[in-house]
Image (cartoon, rainbow, N blue to C red):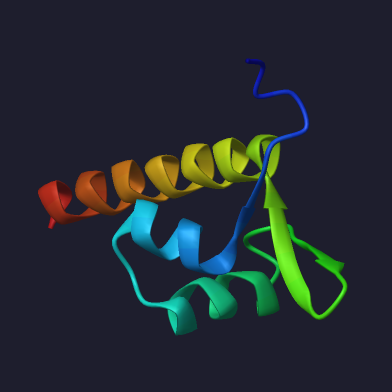
Amino acid sequence: MSDLGRTYTLAEIAEYLMVSNRTVWNYIASGKLKAFKLGNSYRVTKESLEEFQEKLSAENTIKKQKTKNT
């Protein structure tokens, strides 16, 4: 089965990232994680999740480099 068009709930994202539902909501509210409303809930596409993970990884790399240089 293809993951094309796969979407995730906030709870699924929270479990996957090992953070709270509130943290996921904060990522969405701040614009760091793209989501869309479907009925009364929000969904995140697989593409948006992958993009978010890449940005998060890049931010962590920059933080590590800054820590090394201090």
